[in-house]
Image 1: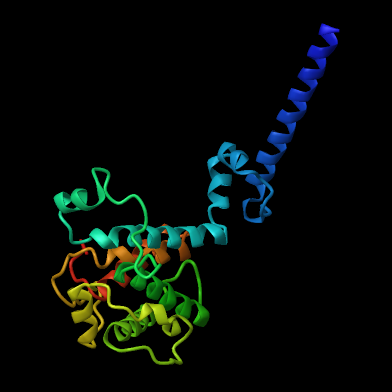
Image 2: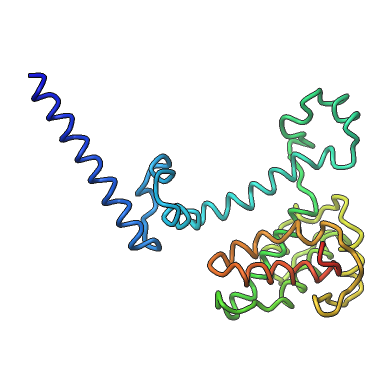
Length: 239
């Protein structure tokens, strides 16, 4: 009986191993056609790095990237200009542990607003023409940034510039950076070749996630796209 039990357990183990091997092989051979829900999260973590990378490019993970940035932004906004002492005094030794709501809402800042408008510009460029091996039309991003500027300077009014420009909650001034405001108000478009100013603040890099998401298959294009989006308002490479 013991022998038969061992044989049964061994057969089950071999069957499980064969199934896992088949899944890994299928994933490696056809990474772009892995059906949603085919793997459990635990199985995904055990797969080869290539297969795991393929699963990261599902729409839900793109949404997760942008939403995660917005969540971090909302958590940090109430203490953005506070000292460590005042943070601990108000929220305790561990600092902010949950959203600080205002009228029942966790507010985002210009960081998330401009990230959204970066995506808006890149998508408008992609609608005209998209090639993962070619740069997008950065002028579209500049136009979207000017649409963002309007949300900081004017009250909401219906727009024909797309659905992003018609989101009423984006018409909110949350301490936008002076460099971004000044660069966009000038009417000029900064480029890597022609610096619009000498700023190396973080206002450029804070909004570049959409570039990496759109050009994930071409890191070189993704990097240059992010850099050129940043150069619209920030002249120094560090910005």
